[in-house]
Structures are given as structure tokens and as C-alpha cells.
Length: 117
Length: 116
Picture 1 (spheres, rainbow over the protein chains, first blue to last red):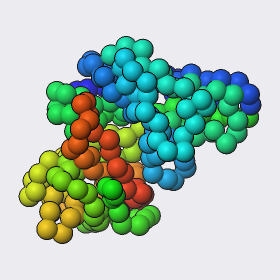
Picture 2 (cartoon, chains in turn yellow, cyan):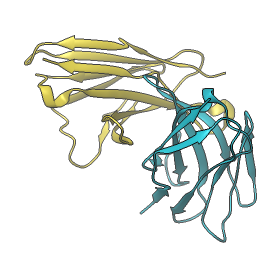
Picture 3 (cartoon, one colour):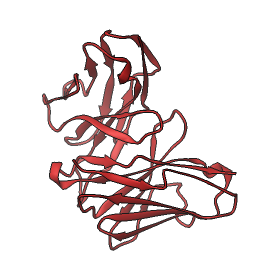
Picture 4 (cartoon, rainbow over the protein chains, first blue to last red):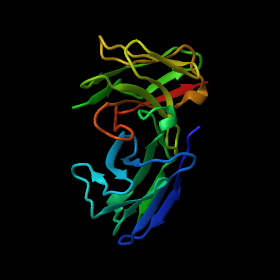
């Protein structure tokens, strides 16, 4: 089946540093990927839609200069948390739709847990 | 806009008990409906889906029927196991002008704990 990977699975960084998270579709191409943020015991909050070959679309209230998204190829999207602060600590999850099972079905990565000290 | 409302948790059951997690939705048009499961420390996995009214999605003993008249997609399982302990999310995707994949709207999630 379709697989989406994320790297790293967890990261701890100091306040003020930048962290890059990769999302890859392993056996299919994805012109669109989605980035979510999840706080403990809460639902997923859509942050932005990553579009291959064009700018990402950010949800209201999400700072585009804070969360940089680059859809480098048909199988890779990256989320960079710039100048991270403790309040950015969260579980970040990406997803991508697979056309093999219809465009309505999305496959999720395993998530990246970011802890900012 | 689209919205999904899930039964509040947490839900605690004994092994082999019957499970129902309620989910209702509000959407324009004809959305597809999904149940995703999230095990501790992991991302979401698709559990089942239904794309049109009266469709029944099923997987691993779980079932949910797309009820347009009641705008519901309740998740059921006849006999739960300890390994079913996880968080369950109901979601819908609208069919709009998106060219590749549709945005998902999630419910709040329901934590299920099954005790032996």
C-alpha cells in the first residue's frame, strides 16, 4: 500500500534554532501534501497545503515566515520551523493523497515530535 | 463550512464488549467519510472509508455506514480487543475544486481503552 515517511521521527532543539522536517511519499507521486500539527490529546490542526511547483497555502493564523514549506519534488515536502521556541513543541504530521485509491484517500506519515528547550 | 462532531471520550471497555463511537457531520455536497486510528506515538492510519450514501466501510471487524439522512457515520465493532486501544478520528473530505486530494476535516478524536 501507499506509504508516507517522515524524518526525523523526533527532534530536540534549543530555542532559537531552526528545524527541518521531511515528508516523503515512498511509492507514489504527490503533487499535494498536507502538514498538520497535533497537541497532546487533541485533534489534528491543518497548518498548510504544500503544492509541488508553487507556493504553499497556509491556514488562517499560521505564520508562513515561521513555518516554511518547500515542495521540492513530486515525492518530497519539507517543513522548516524557523527560530523555534518552546511553544512550537508539538507533534507534526504530514499526509499525501494517493491516486491509486482515489484522490479522497490520504496517507499519513508517522509524525515528528518536536521538543524545543 | 464543513465540520465533524464526535462522541466525547474517553471510552473504556472490557475485552469483547460492543463498541460504538458516534460521528455526525455537516457538509455541503457529497463528502467522503473516513475513520482513522492513531496508536500511541504514531501517525494516523486509515481504518475505513465510505464515499457515498448507504455505503458501508469495514476493516478489522470495524464497520461504519454512511447515513445521509442522519448525516452520521458511526463506528461499530462487535467485540473489541485490548489491541484496539487507540484514538479514533472521524473525518470528511469535501469534493471541491482541489486538483489533487481533498482537505480533511477531523473530529475531535475519541480515546478508546480496552481492558483485559
